[in-house]
Image 1 (cartoon, rainbow, N blue to C red):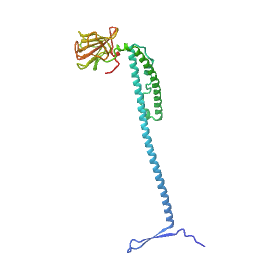
Image 2 (tube, helix red, strand yellow):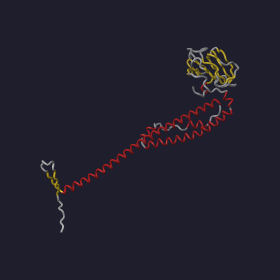
Image 3 (tube, one colour):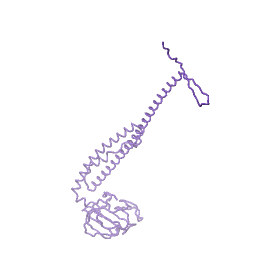
Image 4 (spheres, rainbow, N blue to C red):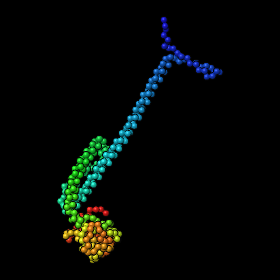
Length: 311
């Protein structure tokens, strides 16, 4: 009959440091070996679990960082898109205003297209988009709804503006000869120092009515005809010094005063943009400048109403 090994079997460990030293003897219980083996296995499993958990957490953290970066980039892109919408609307409003000005000069009927553009597309909320984004999903929803509204309004405005400009183009083509004889550009480059209307007299005579605009600049700066027409005066005027007057039609004429030199003669036909003289300081003048004046039916009107280009 076989006998089972005793459960409390022990193991002897001999340590021999050197031949001259005493042998050291240790006895280790089998129970401790079994518990040590189990503890080592458990510790190994725990280490494996900890390593796997650490790797998972690091991966999640990396994904979170990537998602946060992507979210920040998307929010910045949304803000840029919102600002682009505002810029587009602003440019469309400028086009609509310019169209109105052209129609006013040409005395054509007002188009509904410009009214649509001027009335649509603007923001209804006054909170900055970056502030709305910070409010979380609700703020993002509000911002996206506002952007959707603006995109829809801009689309509608563009269609109406396109139709309106096409009508204006046809009107200009039909009245092309008349347009050529209508003032529409700056007569020179410089700084506008006096506007049209009542002002304090530069000669200390209280308030007086200024029938044109003054543009200061360097002596010798070219002066251009603002529309095609016939020169009716190219000489001296007691107040404006060396002066050029151009008749553009039976109702519209322009005057250019205080010139240094006149380069056209009376009766000459000139075209828009043609040099007619050079800026000076002649006549009753307090400094080098051009006095530019537009008369409609012999009555001075504000020249800025007839200026479409920029310096």
